[in-house]
Image (cartoon, rainbow, N blue to C red; front, side):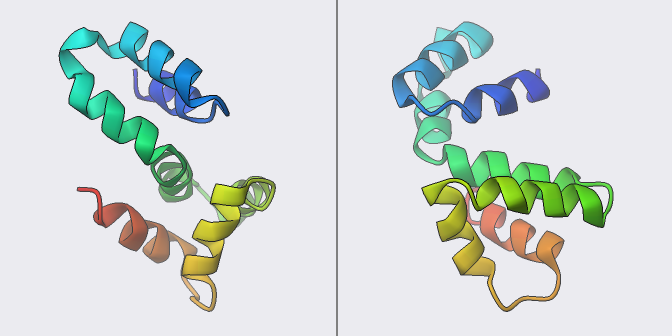
Length: 96
């Protein structure tokens, strides 16, 4: 389920993202879905950075982040930091 939700959060169109999240999670989770759609870049990229198994995986996520406006904004937030995983945790902790 988690992988499916993360994949949906990478969709560009917020309406498609919302529709697919409703299909995956059900209509009982309206507030959660709205929160996920609003913060989809932070949730998707932050989770993927935290789940990266090695530096090559982290570099691949960072390269993907550089291709999107939201990803570049997140990278700017964590610029100058040595530990990318620690910074991803810092970013995602705002939404726990």
